Structure formats: structure tokens, C-alpha cells
Length: 81
Image (cartoon, rainbow, N blue to C red; front, side):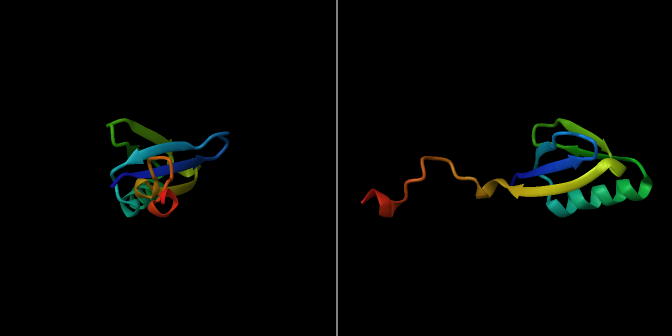
């Protein structure tokens, strides 16, 4: 399952959006460790690209599961009758 992680960064006008195969708890654990070590929070997306942010500058993380997204025109069986 792919999870989209939106990373809010302090003093940045836009958030970063990363689609990853990592579980949300693993992402939170990585951020927690980076904060504890006063280091960089690193997240790799599902295509192998890496995003690195100073952990102290992460304002928030927002998780969205791709399984919630629907593809198509939104017609259901009841509306088609």
C-alpha cells in the first residue's frame, strides 16, 4: 500500500509531498530518531527518490492512503439504472 506523506516545513511556503511504501509508524519513528539525534529526516519515495529535511524544521506530517483515491467518473451501479 502506498501512503502519501505531506511534510510541512517551517518557513517554507509549500509542503513537500512524498508517496512511499513505508508504514506511517515507520515514518514517525524515523522522524523521532532524527529529532532525538538532532539530524536530518530522510524519506525515500516509491520511485527511489530521497527527500531530506532538517528534523528540527519539520512542522507537521500528514498521512493519506492511496487506497482512498478513486479512479473513474464516479458513477455507481444505482445511478446507472
